[in-house]
Length: 291
Image (cartoon, rainbow, N blue to C red; front, side, top):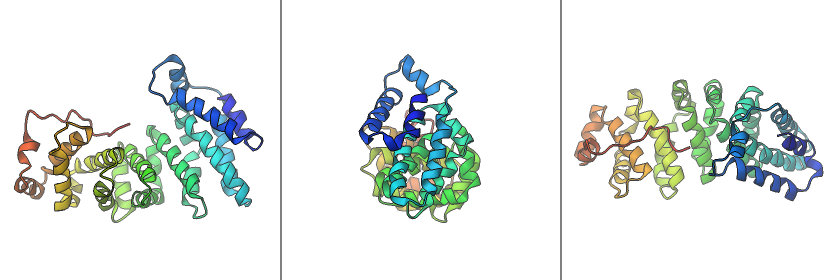
């Protein structure tokens, strides 16, 4: 951690290749699939390094500087440094405490922020929202929720995936359900549209289905899911031969929808009742979505 702090403080004088190699090595250890003592130490152990405060301060300075061209490059370097640091849960919690969410939101909100910097800011936000303390931000800042709904309506699949993950993480906390819903008049409609827009992107489809399942679990939102095209899409996923994660989530969505009499009748008329009500079919799925 102290090494990353040194890199951040001296980023102007270090080659881009050297910084990229340091970031790559850290990601390989902390973000890899192998479980070992070093990874556990990097991801879970608390430390005394001031690296998070240092990077947050440098991000704030770079995003606020009038020297746009020079600081756009530095801003991307600092965001690239921040991302692997956030693989550590204590670092993600620290990021919430020191106001890093506000800094990243400001970067995203600025019309002058270049697309690569916005994309990286979204990736960092996704990692921060893994920790419970971040959910209150989306409740307290309706403009942030509105920004996320704008992103999920965009055409950049990676950005849409990041924004959908952020929403899914936040929705683990009940107050965020209403906050995201109220952020835009068509939040749920945009999510439903993405089922067709990105039906070839498995990761994005699973995330979108996970968010929809969380909303359908609440009776008061079910009136928003009476579209025949939506039900047809969910039934199509349910009828797939393979027992995939997305199929498990889709069956869970239909089971939630059956709590509404109108939706239950629609599902029956579409011939999906047998699949949904099959006692031998267990979703075996928590509803919180992929990690």
